[in-house]
Image 1 (spheres, helix red, strand yellow):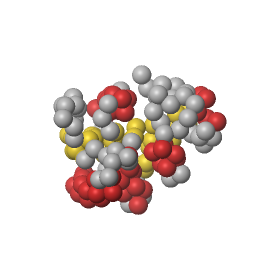
Image 2 (tube, rainbow, N blue to C red):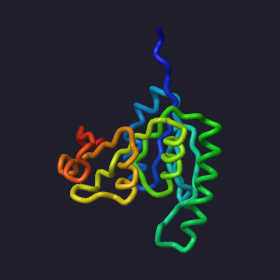
Image 3 (cartoon, one colour):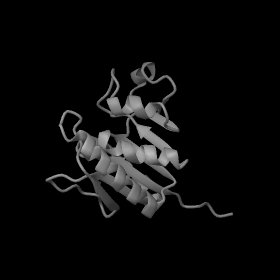
Image 4 (cartoon, rainbow, N blue to C red):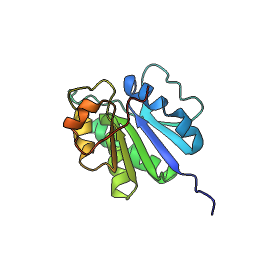
Length: 156
């Protein structure tokens, strides 16, 4: 029997989280993949991969609840259109709705904690750790914070 190609959602906010996600481009190329990221004033290079954009969310802004609500709706539309088998996420807040939607619909949630975190957890990581099917850390020291995580080294 032939191996089924998976449909994967690669989700990350912009900046360093997005750069980490793009290190997984070889995996994107192996499967039917799409990217979910934030819309910013500057363009991101998604290297020819189908891309969907969400609102940027800053938890300290007054519009955080509204922006998260908009992102829940946008993420749901993307989920229904694409029907991913799994989401691979490097964070942060704007990507949490897709992670939660995938979990609700019994799809796999794979989270990769930030390379920048060596001794402390991200807020998004702490939340997703509770329900992720696989949770990866990029530093062995992070296993003290996330004891059930998987350490395979950095993705850089």
